Structures are given as C-alpha cells and as structure tokens.
Amino acid sequence: MASEKPIVVVTCTAPVNIAVVKYWGKRDEELILPINSSLSVTLHQDQLKTTTTAAISRDFTEDRIWLNGQEEDVGQPRLQACLREIRRLARKRRSNGHEDPLPLSLSYKVHVASENNFPTAAGLASSAAGYACLAYALARVYGVDSDLSEVARRGSGSACRSLYGGFVEWQMGERPDGKDSIAHQVAPESHWPELRVLILVVSAERKPMGSTAGMQTSVETSALLKFRAEALVPARMAEMTRCIRERDFQAFGQLTMKDSNQFHATCLDTFPPISYLSDTSRRIIQLVHRFNAHHGRTKVAYTFDAGPNAVVFTLDDTVAEFVAAVRHSFPPESNGEKFLKGLPVEPILLSDELKAALGMDPVPGSIRYIIATQVGPGPQVLDDPGAHLLGPDGLPKPAA
Ligand code: DP6
Image (tube, rainbow, N blue to C red; front, side, top):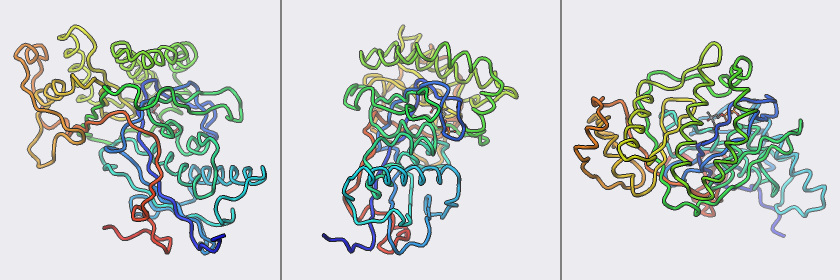
C-alpha cells in the first residue's frame, strides 16, 4: 500500500441554485431545519461556481480556511458544525467496517481554500455553492460516501440543494433530529434543455439584511409566513414538481413569480418590515408582465431572493427578444463593463409594437450587467492536480 503519503488533497466545484419555491424560516436554528419544503433549479457551473480544495495531513497542527485568498476564522459556528458532522460520518463509516479508502487518520487537521468564479460584490448568493462545495470536498478527503444534505445544510440551509444538478427538492422532514430533512433530485439537468436563465445584476445602493437574521424575524412576527408554510407550500411543491416533469413553462413561470411575490409579501408582513426589492427590481417585474401581456402568454418569469437582483427564466426561443427588451428599458452605461456575460445571445431589434407595449422610460445604468446561463449539473471532482488551490505545503498557491 502506498500509505506514506504526507498529504491528501481533493478539489471540487459546486453550483449556485435558485429557489422557485422559497425556503424562508427555520423550526430549529441550530440544526437548520426549515418550516417548509423548497424546490430549486441548479445553475450551470460554466457561469457560476465555487471551487474548493480540502487537504488533510498529519503535519497540520490546526484546521484552517481561506476564502477568496483571505484566511478566515475557522471557529465560526456553522463551519465548525460542518467539520464536526463530516468527521462524525467518517467515524460512523469506519465503525461500520469499511476499509479506509485513504491512508488517513480522523485526527488529521484539514486545510480548506475556496473561491468563486463570480464577484462577491455583485450580491449573488454564494453561501449555497460554498457550503455544498465544502461538504463535497470534505467528504472526499475523509472518505465519506453517504448523503451530504446534513453537512451542507448545517452551513446554510439552501446549500443542501446545491448538492445535485437539475431540479432539486429539499424535503423539510418532520423529525426533531433532522435526519429526514434532505435534498434530492426531482429531474436531471438534461430534462429541460430549452430552459434558460438570465441573472439581471442591478446596481445596489446598500447591502440588504442577511437571510439568517431576516427569516428569524419573519418566523417571530409574520402570521402570513406561518400560513404560507403550513397551508400553501405543500400544494405548491406538488404543482411545481408537475410543471417541471411536464415541462409546462407557462405554469412553471406563473408559479415561480407568485412564489417569489409571496416570499417578498411575508418580508413586508415581518415586523419591523424587511424589503429586499429595489425600484429597479420593481421595474423589472413590470417589464416582465408587460412583455408577457404583449405576447398573450407567460414567456418569461422572474424570481428574487434576499436582494434586488432578478433571476429570469425563459426558453431558448425567447432569450434574444427579452434581452433586447432589457437593453431597451435599462440601457447599459458605457463604463467599459461588458453588459452581457455568459452564454452568447444574438442581438436583435425590437419591434415598434413591443417597444410601445413596454411603455417604459429608459433608466440608463440601473442594470449593471446580465449573466446568461442554463440548468447545470451538481458538484464535480477535478482530477487535474493543477486545479488545486492549495500547494504541496498545504498553503494557498500564490494567485496566478
Ligand atoms: C431567499 O440558505 O441563505 O434565498 O439557512 O440561514 O443560511 P440560512 O439561509 P439561506 O436562505 C436562503 C433564502 C432564499 C430562498 C431560498 O434559497 O430558498
């Protein structure tokens, strides 16, 4: 056996996900157990991903973590919960009589380095991809092959949905210990190839309140949230699953928009109220409804998380026209930044009828840029040793 390897290194990538039935509110803050099930679409890693390298070695004296090149406090409770959980699973596997796949000791300390391929400053949620990637990479260095929902979830609730590609459900579960609060795939990424996703990154004036604090206040004060979770979400989960299975875009789009609006309504019902949408977000909502009204059917659908950026779903035959409508209503400021990133979109001219139907005064610069992407796969292991973010000494490689 080649057992004298001083260091075991694994590098993985994980995707961002966007919920179409929203998670908002916990029934257990410590275990991160939700008050309702949720459902999301996994976005393609060609456009948005986290890359994480985890290394274990008998020579490391403490656990350490670097995010986007900066060393962070490894003592953060959520990070500690993930580490504890993965080591517990590894111990359990060993006591079940499995041979160690790697020459390691569970007492070895871990070094972790993680980075995003998209700017954190854009306000795109990165914690889901980050914790899913952490769980996936730790599982590989410690030789764990069981379900990782619990590990990722302890980092950030929505992270358990980034463990799979395609369309993913997080079942709320009922048990107090959370063992049945797990994510699983509803349909793979190949299921709906025509589906496209546009992220409209708006120019934010201020940093909104974080999800964790926001949902805690909502659970404490919003009767509407309680009603939504108990009386409405179960049927919405079933209906959303049907829309996806049958690739029914009209119904999928309508329910996606309604669920986003209802989530933001529960924020307004929170006391003191929380508002994540900006004037630009509301103008995007208006643009989408006018675009759909002009066509006489739901061709595009928006959803918003705990911030002002819009995520828009549409089908491949509508992308070019909708992007042209966005450009018309929110003309880019010539600040040198590319307005359209990601998948190529053919430039087209808008018809005068559509321009008139949109009936909006252009607001230059209020959308900074668009990222065009699609549904994508779950976490991946990178085999190329050149991809490691940590060098043979277990410290971050200097930026290239
Ligand atoms: C609005 O998963 O970020 O994006 O579990 O406290 O870390 P914590 O919250 P987080 O909340 C995500 C909320 C949301 C909706 C969703 O993704 O379902």
